[in-house]
Amino acid sequence: MKVADKVFVVTGAGSGIGKALVEVLLEKNAKIAAVDIHEETLQQLKQSVGEKADRISTHTLDISDKQAVEQLPDKIIEAHGYVDAVINNAGIIQPFVKINDLDYKSIEKVMNINFYGTLYMTKSFLPHLLSRPEAHIVNVSSMGGFLPVPGQSVYGASKAAVKLLTEGLYAELIDTNVNVSVVFPGATETNITKNSGVDIPLQASSQTKKYKTLPASDAAKIIVKGIEGNKVQIFVGSDSKLMNRLYRLNSTFATRLIAKQMKSLLSK
Image (spheres, rainbow, N blue to C red):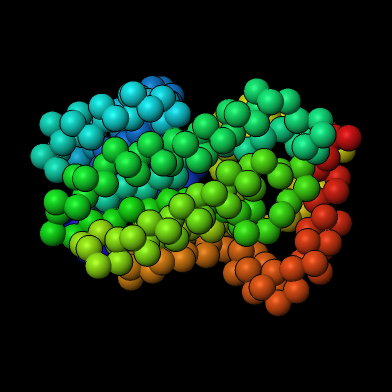
């Protein structure tokens, strides 16, 4: 899909990979409907892009609010005239605890934002995308969506649901004008922990710094390149690519390897 002059809806656009995606897409002359739950970060985004701000509309929204999401397409079409692509990037992680210690409120919040939010956005925009000459839906899953990570089991389940939802959607739309991609980021430099209201256990904070993370700007470039190439699966980062191969080769070994590396992240 050619990016220039297309209208992209990007959720979680105020920070992290979402913000970086907006910046990369603007460089390629796209128009952006930036969606985020935080009004302040959206305004900071517009200020940061300078003269390109006239190609951005901002929409403060909680994507887990189905009624609000259902009203969003009309607002964006009013601002831009049409919609060509939706990048469902917004998501949160869970507290770093085992399922046995994870409260239902946290479980429901993760599932509502990561899975249902993606589903609401997809269903609300799909009828409009089907009317375009060419369109694209991009759903951001995670390396944790195909590889179990202790202490993030419910987060992983939500992202695994996004993975299969997207792959099923691809199969359903294979003979239409709508392209579909699922993204699997590995360790990336974002503020998802802070935005999720989650604290990394003190005993693990120093260890996490040892792991190399991919800059959000590099992640965004990989994703946009994948969109331009109409790739169905987009693996972001060498760790995501490596663990995908390893998990397919020997899932038990891969699971034990991750369990050993991530053990210190568990607060209990």
